[in-house]
Length: 420
Image (cartoon, rainbow, N blue to C red):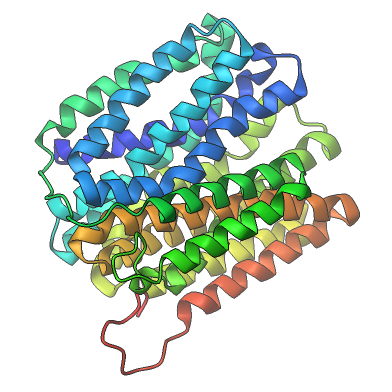
C-alpha cells in the first residue's frame, strides 16, 4: 500500500478517533453534565460548521497546504489539550481541534483525487482511506478506556501527537495541487458556518430560540451561491448530498438510541456497551476496501443502494427482534461500510479536479448535519414512544435513502449527477 495513501488515511483516522476516544473519559474529565456535553459537542459543532469552508480553502489555496496545516494544528492542539488546567480551556481547545479536523477531510480527498486520476484506482484508494480511518471508530472507545484507566485522561490527547507526526512523514510526497483562482466567497463561507453551527447548537442543546438564526443564515447562503463563482457551485448539489445526510441520520441516531437502550433497559455497563457495538464497528475497519474494489468494477450506485438496504434491514431486525442484536448490528455495520465509500467516490469523483475539495467538504457537511438531526429527532421520538417504533422510523428513512440513490434524473443534462 503506498505510503502516501496511508499518511492521508491517518489524517482522517485522527478525526474519527478524536470523535469517540473522549466519550469514555468524560467522567474523569468533569463531574458536571453540561461540561461533559460541551467537551464532546465543542469538537462536533466546529467540525460540522467548518467543513464547507475547509473544502473551499482546499481548492482555493491548494489541498497539500491545507492538509499539512490541519495535520500540524491537530498535533499541536492535542498536546495543548493534554496540559489543560481548566474545563473552559479544554472546551476551547476541543473547538479548535474541530476546525483542524475539518481541514483534514476535504483536503485528503482532494489529494487522493490528484494522486489517483483513474476512476478505478481512485475508487480503490478511497475504499482504503475509509477503511483505515474507520478503525478510529473501533479504536476510540477501547483505547480511550485503556489509556484513561492506566495513565489518566491526558493520555487520550497525547496519543494523537505521534500519529500526526507519522502521518506528516508519510504524506510528505503529496502532490502539489494548483490553487484555484477566484474571488474569496466571504458571505458564503460565513453564512454556512453560522447556519450549521447554530443548527447544531439548537439541536444538541435543545434551544429552539436560535433556529431562526440558522434559517436566515441558510437563506443567505443559498442566495449567495447563485453567482457563477460561488463557493458551492450548483452542479455539485446532488442526490449524493441528500443520501449522505440520510446515512448519517440513521447511523448516528440509531447508535444514540441503542446506547441508551443497552445501558438503561438491558443494564449494560459503559464498557459492555462499547463491546456490544463491535459487530457494527468492526466491518467499518475492513469492508470499505472491498467496497472500493466493487465500486471500481461496477460503479457506486449498486453498492450504495445495497448499503442502505442492509442498514434498513439491520435496524428493522433490532426493532422487532432485539435478541438478534449481533446480527442486526453486523448488517448495519456492513451497510455503512458499503454506502459511505460509494457515496464518497460518487460525489468527489464526479467533481472537476479543481472542485474536489469543496465536493468532499459538502458531502461531509451534509453527513454531519444528518448526524445531528438523527440524534436530536430520534432521541426526541424515543422519549415519546417506544424504542421499537423509533428504530422502525429510522429503518423506513434508510430504505428511503436507497430509493434516493437508485432513482435516475431526467435525461438530456450536460453533466450527469454523481450517482448516475
